[in-house]
Length: 136
Image (tube, rainbow, N blue to C red; front, side, top):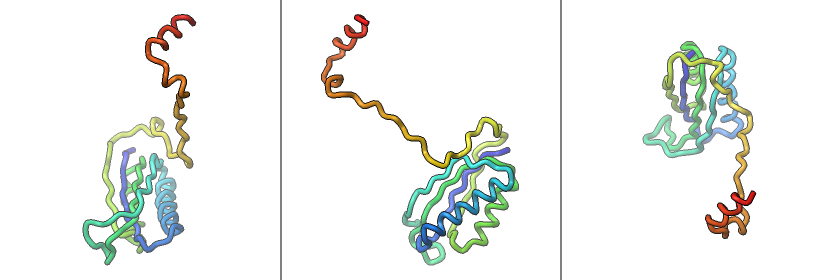
């Protein structure tokens, strides 16, 4: 299996449901051909470098996945037929990727726990912290 990255630009006039429908369709093609989606990133609406299909802006979506070479041709065929997709580009990131070592995309991003220091801990000088550790 190989690892790929596909960037596609959706028409900015499309609704949020259309964007989700395009993404779901592409994810369905990948999973239907025994591929694994490793990351999915909606980058938002951005200005295009030049007009594409009379549009100056587009909604960018970046997707990483692992699969066989046939997946790329099927994804690009689906994007070519979909009028909502303005442009797309697929890049091969790696050859011979072990599918067991790849973590599939999670439906919700993990919440990062941040360590919050109390004002007393912030005000304590470093020497005081060391002496407190030695006493324990």
